Length: 319
Image (cartoon, rainbow, N blue to C red; front, side):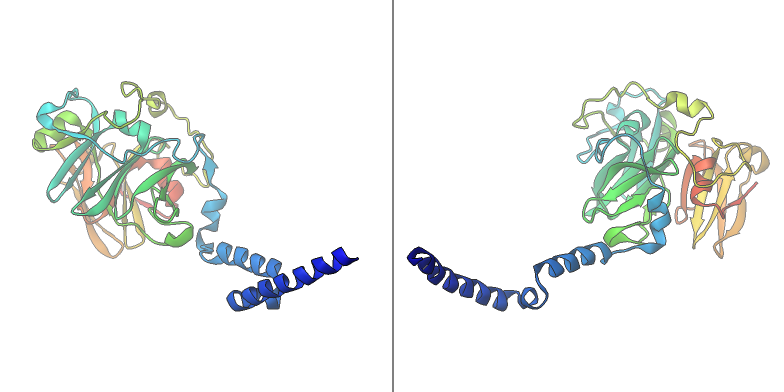
């Protein structure tokens, strides 16, 4: 009994001190209880950025196989000058031309990494390529990683600063802090190294010194490009064009259009101008780079038709 009394006399002051500390620091725990406070915090964490407008996309995300960052972005790109590059002229490259910075990213490297992060004028830039939708696009202002997941077969990236997920084709955050935010973009031109170097003799070119060991002499998607297979389910489909025909996808002021590459030069040797999103857009065949392009201020990318339509079912086709 004496022992119990001694323990009681010792415990009561301690409990009182703890209670006083809690009352001063966390009065909410006194009034509601710790379990209720914890549940409220969990709910708040889940609803800070609920992003309901993009719930449909999130519900149709599929695993592409690799885990997050299982396809590693290149974060420390190594370049050489065009005169130092040992690339066959026929190598497909993704070229960018920004004020004061011209560079080419060989497809044999991009298929293994899908994202290259860099800086230009103290601003983060990302060059992205999705092999399953055959789409290349540049983004300003974020350092991006590869989630390993897909929406309509298209690469879903994530922003390193906020972890918000961003499908490449739309460039819009679908959850987290970037919910509903559209990332600014810049064009990426798909052409051959020979043609790009000829037009931009001062260009830099990404080397295989990526920090990773990959077989950059092989393309794991080579057969996929040549057949009609689409690996993962689509939310919507259109037979208006062959699924894997290439189009120039265009977006302006919330409106979209698709211009088929096949037959364009024959049908429109001088280009074509049409209204999109309340503005005039001109599309023409670049004879130097042998590709279809539009004005730089229009969001644009070459892409498989099935992928463009799945992301833009309201798109119009410019024949």
